[in-house]
Structures are given as C-alpha cells and as structure tokens.
Amino acid sequence: MARTSLQCRECKKEYETAFKYICDDCFGPLDVKYNFPTVSKDTFSNREHTYWRYFELLPIENKSNIISIDAGMTPLTKAENLGKKLGLNNLYIKNDSVNPTFSFKDRPAGVAISKAKEFGLSAVGCASTGNLASATAAHAAKGGFPCHVFAPSDIEMAKIAQALSYGANYVAVDGTYDDANRIAAQIGDSKGIGIVNINMRSHYVEGSKTLAYEVAEQLDWSVPDQLIVPVGSGAMLNAICKGFEELQTVSLLNDVSNMHM
Image 1: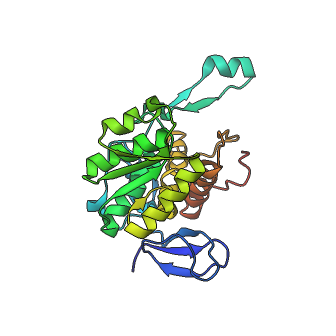
Image 2: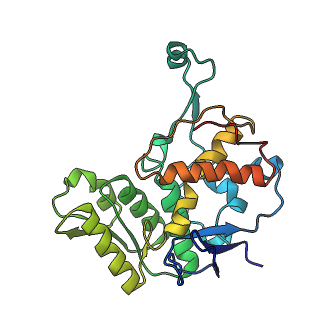
C-alpha cells in the first residue's frame, strides 16, 4: 500500500497520489494524506544531518528519488542576550539562512523536485522573484532537470542572479508577479512541467513542516511554549503547525494544543 494519497481540503474526496493539485469535483486544493509507519525517536538517530532524516514522514515513496543538496538540520541557537532583554530564559532562534541557497525555501523546493522525479517529469520551474527561484534552480541542477523561472520582466537582476548561476532559464513576463504566476500555471499544466509552487504545491508545502520536526528534535522532543513564525502567504505557518500535529499523531510529542503561535 502506498504511504500517501491526496485529499481535497474542501470536500474531502481522496485520490491516489498523482501529478495533480486540484479536486476534480469542487476544484479545491489537494493535500497529502499519510499512512504513517510506526516510528520512534530512535528511528531518526544516527542519520544524515538534513531534513531527509525524516523520510518516513515525507511524501516520497522511494529514497532513490530524493534530490538533496544537504539542506536542513540548521542551528537552533539560544539567543541569550536578546532573551535577557525580553525577560526570557529560554529563547531560541532557528537559523535557516545557513541552508545551501540561504533560505528555508530549500525545504519545500527539495521535496517538490524530488516528487517531480518520482512522477517522471522532464522539467521543473517556479514563479518567483527571489529565494524560491534560487532553491528551485539549485535542486534542478542537482537532479539534472531543465528549470524555468517565471518572473516579471522589470525585476532587479540581482534577485535572480543566483538562480541563473545554477543554469535556470529566465522567462520574463510583461506584468506583475501575479501575471508571472498565472502564465507559469498555464505553461506548467499544458506542457507537463512541475511548477513547484503551483502544480506541485500539494507536495511542495510538505517540505516546510520539517522546520517543526527539527525544532522538536533539537529541543529533545519537547513542545515549545511559544512559537513565532514570520508570515507572508501563511503557507509556512500552516506547514509548521501541521508538522507539530503530525509528531503528536505518531506519538513523538505529547499534547501540542497548549503551544501558542
């Protein structure tokens, strides 16, 4: 039996895992649903220091499809001086700026492109004006995929220089980021290209939850009292919440309901 399936967030219809992201019935978004194996704290000991140490909790069926640039297991640093100023004895900062392309986007991009390999796709891409473009291009280069970055034509070149250095193809769109996103969706769906933050999004968002896994493990499998997460679209916040809830589901954490976000 497959470890994962897809389930509509709105009407709850389930599908076998496939290269799709929208429900056929109600057009709602599809989320990954897991049949989690039995795991324990010992399952993850003595493994590689990347987020792929949590393979059993991620949506890749076969380890041979993993495309890794050694992202994850970033430092959880005790901020003693800042903690003193704020009156907090145990304040920690998760430093994802030390990931290979310098942002947390290495997490979702790596999972999405690994799944693109598992689906047998021939090319990947993203709609991005910065960090995601770099993360997608780096993983694509590691996996041998052509990579297409869709961004507004008037973007500052410094924002995509890193992505271009990995060999990405810049698709300049005359318009806003929303226009770039729309065109990326149309081309991705019509050409069978895995656009990580659009038609691969169901699997893409699963990468961000590894922040929760790492924080829990780095705190000796305990639940933080308070968690502060920067919010843009809110996708990372939702993924981190899901990560802590899943650790409770597999009995690696106690009750997480008292954690304040």
